[in-house]
Length: 247
Image (cartoon, rainbow, N blue to C red):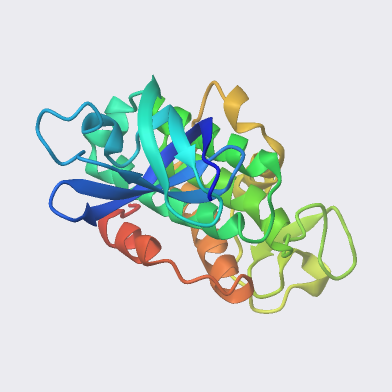
């Protein structure tokens, strides 16, 4: 006989799909259990108490009947933050789709609690109105540590010189003048800011003011770096690229 456990878990609904005529299966990215599957019985019914808490990007404390090797069952949920500004904005929603898919992949490589905390901080900052591209890029930079492919952002990848000229995804980070080949030369601000973004704590960010030129150079580097070194292919990233353009 299977012994049921009633657990209260903090998490975010990152996916949902129909189950039968009235229920849904939720994918919940949790603080302590990684990504788990939970059935929300009857949540497609208009009068269901579980209807509103069974939607994507519900950030809540979920009370569940937990099964470690099967679908758990949702009992109730207490909303932590409704993330209203994200849910009503297509661009913000697209960013959260991407970082949610990325986070679920990173959690397969590491169970470090910093991953979840950084993910939640990213959601909250984007919901507060901070530039979603910048915040997402910061998260992507942090996740590279857990994927085991950290770029060299302390000095030249060849000699370690602090007097760097540019940033190269092909070379794996900063490159100095003496070892520059034919790489595109980014602006001095890009070199300074990407180093800062690598170490900033997302939850403590109070101001973001970065030019479009610098944003594009940083975002292009990160996109190319992920493509070259992580082996991850995320459909949500392709969709995001189609709707977000930097002038």
